[in-house]
Image 1 (tube, one colour):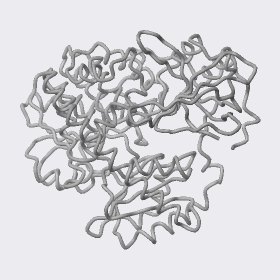
Image 2 (image 1 turned 90 degrees about the vertical axis):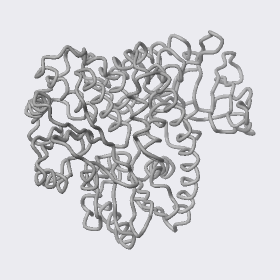
Image 3 (image 1 turned 180 degrees about the vertical axis):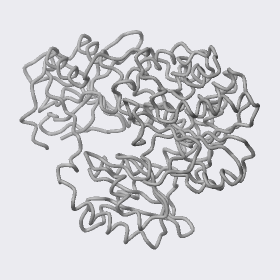
Image 4 (image 1 turned 120 degrees about the vertical axis):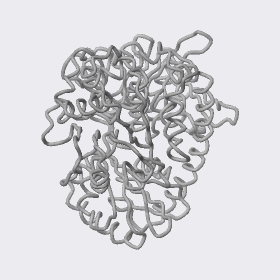
Length: 534
């Protein structure tokens, strides 16, 4: 068990102060979101799109197959429908097209103007082909720019060194939405930009953007819009979640994986058709397909995770950077499996799927280790790579895997050991007597929780177990009744999902947990959710 001697003993007042200190200032209002014109090239891009519309030119949006890219494309589709103006969309297929606007994609496109969303910052070859064919190219992206940029008409990316937008940690869908705000002005339209927030907030949460500053505002407002939206897909999501209010974690754990599953296992167009459906009937059909794909994804992910863990555990020593590869692994789940390895071994992890002599995969990091920079320093071994500090994608020849593994681990020796420490966010110890509905209301006032505003974890030390019951049709979940000590009366319930717990000999438990609302038969109670046993 880690040393938790330094953890503070918390009450409601000290907890409020601790959570308040996460934010520099009061939440921004929507009206305080910085002017999109501060995004480098955004005004130039908006004028070009407006001219293309006036001149009745053909416009094509090229998206990406993750939630952010699909959401960005869906927002574009909805906006152009409201003009109304015809818009072609292409979301690359992960398996046959690869990532982003590529020469492969351009072979299928007959257009005058291409707008990329959530991709394109590394598309040097595609930009050249566009130039040769007389296609104007506008790139909107948020990934880390390479040293050499594509030769495009405009590049809108908050991470460009020339860009002075005051908050750069925004996702691809936000960049697209901000650009459309400028296009609305250019064309003098009366479209309500708030109407897209139900989709936008899903992208921000799913792409693990820090829930601070404007991101916090957009997610808060977006979840409200989602609750009242007449958009068919939002109605289906609301019915599926069947709760009020909907939280950022509902989106992260229930909605985002389903939208993601289309691109991971089959084709992201299924998810795009869901988000842009014109009727609830059509949205429901697509959502059923997403549910089915998500089930397949979970099965594939569980099997791959099991095999990857066994592979790591068979090593004589666990390296600082885990790199595992296998031929039978589905490339659509390697990113999730990399995250599972990070959780299990507390090391940055790279998981590769091998096919036809090429290894394609995903990297995930932890602590303060910048996995993108590590990969970039060893890019001589790679055919292709891209991403950001905590997550990246890469492609290399199978015969180069061993050399790459050795090289990246050699580079990692220069990193401070403390950078590898996971950011364990156990805030402190709460007295069981303090765990009540008032505490729940206090925590809810700091929603939405997510990246850079994690749901608080608390420590239980040697709590007395009164009873353990197994729940669920397959008895795979545990409900534990606890009290502070043998002599106290008040009890609380601790729920451990996908965990079968047995009564320990000393009838005590030490763990960290989060606090959640349990609603059953119109009765609200507080329940603790097990995170980790010590």
